[in-house]
Amino acid sequence: MKAEGQLFQRLIAFARLLRRAGIPIGPGAVIDALQAVETGGIGTRSDFYWTLHAVLIKRHEHHAIFHEAFHRFWRRDQIERVLAEMLPVTRTDGVKSRVAQRRVEEALGLQKRAAKPPKQQDTVFDMRGTISDAEILRRKDFAQMSAAELEEARRLISAIRMPDDEVTTRRFSSSLRGRIDLARTLRASVRSGGDLIELRFKAPRRKKPPLVALVDISGSMSDYSRPLLQFFHMLTMKRHNVSTFLFGTRLTNVTRALKTRDADDALALCSAGVSDWAGGTRIAQALEEFNKRWSRRVLGQGATVLLVTDGLEREGGGELKREIDRLHRSCRKLIWLNPLLRFEAFEAKAVGIRTILPHVDELRPVHDLSSLASLCDALTETRTSRAHDPKHWLGAA
Image (cartoon, rainbow, N blue to C red; front, side):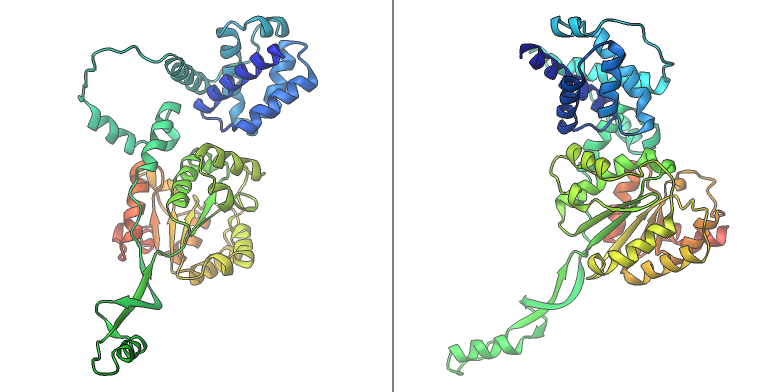
């Protein structure tokens, strides 16, 4: 039992290392890993490696990070009595990715600093370069961020100011001025016996419209999927009428998963519920399924739709045109968020892009923190600037 307890603690530390390196791993996966080790037993180091790999790794691009982290963690920390008996030391076998090495080294550095609290000493605040560093991070592409920068970006995402995008509804509520509320005025006059008639007023009620996010999780969007899901998780936590759908080769509703309070657990639930992550993309088929199954449920009350995709659809013919037009007519506003706009030389020449452009209200970039902040500001505004007008891109092409 003592050996199992020590092994469980080491697995928790290893899972934390993988999470810092950018692999989404929740507490349930750690428990499954322990049960798999207990069931299969530990014969050799290779057996232990592939047992953990089968349970903890869900995406092919995470293999290099896991490989680097496993050999550094279990060899570096000098496994104590339980692991010394269970895991014979063998030579590492794979070719190490430079990106995986950098992320694991940063994660090991974060873990080492977190393990030992700093000693009390005189605090010196050095503010040199703070503003410029924060500004650089705000404008740095998500695809170029390291694990530490992604963690800092996650904190900054939670601090983004929410959009104040209230719209006028057809319902009325009591107000100090506006239209005369005849029913309330008559009821008030009855209380005074009709001697005094005090006018009551009503005004149209204002409320935040629903937000619906359709997020592309295909291979070309894999570097942006996790930061964007953290952004939509933050939106879901701060306003109740947010619906999020993920699509690659099929459409998946992850609204309930993103309502989980802990961001890591929410993203882990999203990963577990999606089977086509970082695969191909079928935009037309996903939009068709959304229009048939979900549009009447979530697009009422003047909903705003955020379509997050690069638009690289091979079949950009009549089916895509029909479905994007139907989606545009079903919502109050359709905003297309495209990470390809990070390139200054971007031109709307792809078939899928030119098919979607005429049916959206705005075209905006979504590749860094500043673009997310400007999106929140744009949701508050009612006018569309020429820089984000889709007609501008169609004319430029």
